[in-house]
Length: 345
Image (cartoon, rainbow, N blue to C red; front, side, top):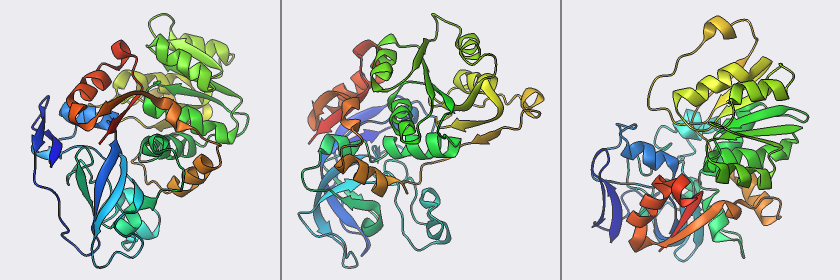
């Protein structure tokens, strides 16, 4: 089969690779029909995730069709269409018992990280019964790909960890796919004001279409001054970092109100400076972490009910054999006006 392989920082290739096989009775082999590229994949290629070894097939998102199941798999059979979760869960360990699936003793974020991932013709899914979801009849598969990772990440790590509630003023720093997912899912909780901050005017215009009440273009305006002006000097109830660089986290520290929350969603590859000399007196909370995907069943229901349409995040489509071109487009998102790409097998 063909697969997109990481060969070290700034090195990737579309190569022939051995097709995965059942290794444990709980495994499921899935034939990929649609996958995508995540900002985390770009972080890996920059060398920000040293636990990813050369030779690893990247990717942790996608939908497909079950080709083969292990003897212990009860929920799926060959031919079933499935949504692949970015998080693998055994369902038995102490962390899984408390819904902390990201830290499963035999799973967590392993696809495209410590085991081969979804940017390939086939993928092996460990603990398939707990790590796959049946696709509802008639569901939009492009929309479902967004439920593999970015939508639960935005909802759980940005909105829920940030404690967004009705009437809040929130600021989302970064209008990329995860920031947009925060924007879409935050509206479940009816914040009064949603401020989106980014450098890219195209993404900001899209954010306004998706529900942002205010947009701020970094470089054209001073984001901190503008947000403090919009909030009468009080700052925001929830500041959500959705980029993963020191400068965006610093903005969050400077705009959070007394009693507010900072929710870090971005993947950071370098240290950030924490200004405790300013924050200690403000009675704030700071949260961060890896998505657990325990909201995926709820998101599937909202998608089926027409209450959520993440497919509108898709801007570009490619064939699987053109995945290197897809990386070029996604890696130059501002120039290409790209948000989320779909790669069709």
